[in-house]
Structures are given as C-alpha cells and as structure tokens.
Length: 322
Ligand code: 2P0
Image (tube, rainbow, N blue to C red):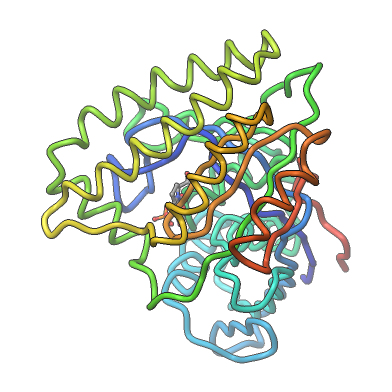
C-alpha cells in the first residue's frame, strides 16, 4: 500500500483565475499550460489501517497542511477507503525561489495515492482527482502542453485536463526570472476569490480568457509564435488587471517584475521574440524559442542572479510501488 510518484510544475499560458465552485474546484474559464522539465515534486504515499492519523512531511519536516488534510479526506471518499495516509514530499525547486507549486504537489500526491491504493486510474481520472486538491494540478498530470477544460456539469465530471499537441515546428523554452525579495505573497486561492467577488473586471476576464484560448490553439496549429506570444502576454496582463480593480485592490507584481517586462519588450525591439507571463507572485516567466534562450537568459540576468531555462517537461509518473 505504498507508492512514489513525480509530477512537474506547470505554467499557464492561458490562466485559470476564478472558480465557479469552490468546493469542487471548478474554474470559471478553461486554461492551457506548459509543463516544465526543471521543477518537480516527488511524493510517497503509504495507506495503512495501522496509522492512527494522517501525517505529512514536506522537505524533511513534519507539518500540518489543511489543503493536504482536506485532500486526503476527499481521496478516501473517492477510493472508498478508511485507511490513514503517511505522505512524504520533496520539492525539487531552488530553495526560497517562490517556485514551489501546488500544481506539482497535488498531481504527485493524487498519482501516488491512487497507485498506493492499488488502483489503475487513467489520466483523465487522475486529472479530475488532482483538481480536487488544487485546480492547476489537473494540468500537471500531463507533460508538454495541457488544456484544462472547465466543463459545464455541476458534479465536475467533465472538468479535467488533457494533452494538447505542441506546435510541430517550434522549439519552445521558458526562461524563469526569480524576483522573490518582497513580503509573503497573497495566497492565490484567496486572491482568486476576492477577484471573483469584488472585481468589476472579472466577467470581462473570463470572456477574454475563452477567446485567448481559441486564439492560442489556432496559433499552435499554425506554428505562429508571434500570435502565441502576444496572446500569452495579453492574457497574463488581463488576469493581473482584475486584481488591481478588486476591493481591496492588490497586485502580485513588484517593481522588478515591471523592469523585467520592459527588458522583454526591449528584446523584441532588437528582433528577439520573447513574451512574458506572471502568476500569483512577482516572478516573470519568459516564453521564447530555444535558439534565443541564452540571449534571453543573459538579458534577464541583469535583473536577478536566479534565472532558469526550462523546456516542456514530462508527464506525472510512478517511480516506485509495492
Ligand atoms: C494558473 N494560478 O492557471 C493560475 C494563474 C495562479 C495564476 O492556478 O485554489 O493554486 O488550489 O485551485 O491552482 C494558482 O492557483 O488554486 C493558479 P486552487 P491554484 O496556473
């Protein structure tokens, strides 16, 4: 009753921002992501009726994590089990870089928990399970590029991710610039909720995101990197605009984030196709072609000494089981 799984982080090119159901983690809009090769979580789950309580150890320290506790309860319901779990996770990300992600964490946990329970869940089922832990985790079940369809059913049965064919003629890279000096970020779950409840731009955001998703899928098929990049950048800024109009207003972006955005624009003016995106924190991720990745890295290195070149990464996988 024990298994170990690895899942990689993913970065949304078209963002998930806002839920239509908080309990089932059903999104207001569909999203599309790239899984990264560099950053991942490795998680071991053991189920046993000899355990009195669930236990969670992260990076070597025992901790209480309400999201993990809640998720284990959901998994027991889904699996029809009563056993408690001991969970051990290690995040393989640079320390204190703000890159540890609930996406890789809950995807690895869902897969390890399922395998340890002796199940053979398919990827669609695993994606739905991971979604119940954290929305973006639904996409980390898959490698390369994944689309999380929002679904329309109230039960969540049709809200899961699936793989998207990568642009066949483009070798994409994502260069991550870490800007993590500021105070603790606003939790993405709370930030999202505040946006849904108070931002007058929220409705416009969901409509825009659905359009951006169609645009980027067409651009993937057409191998049109300019359209892909412009859509990614516009979508990210649209998401961040919703937070600035919330009550109280807030932003995840810092002066250093804006400085890096300027650098990305300067790269484009010099003929290097590079486009930025930002999530629930100040780090900036820059989408470019692999032929330009070194030049992008050099440009970003003038802002921070933590710059990582990433490529499309593998799908979640079991690496050991009883
Ligand atoms: C995304 N983010 O699509 C978006 C863009 C942050 C900005 O998914 O409440 O941790 O656990 O479903 O997945 C971060 O939110 O939120 C996120 P929950 P999650 O990647």
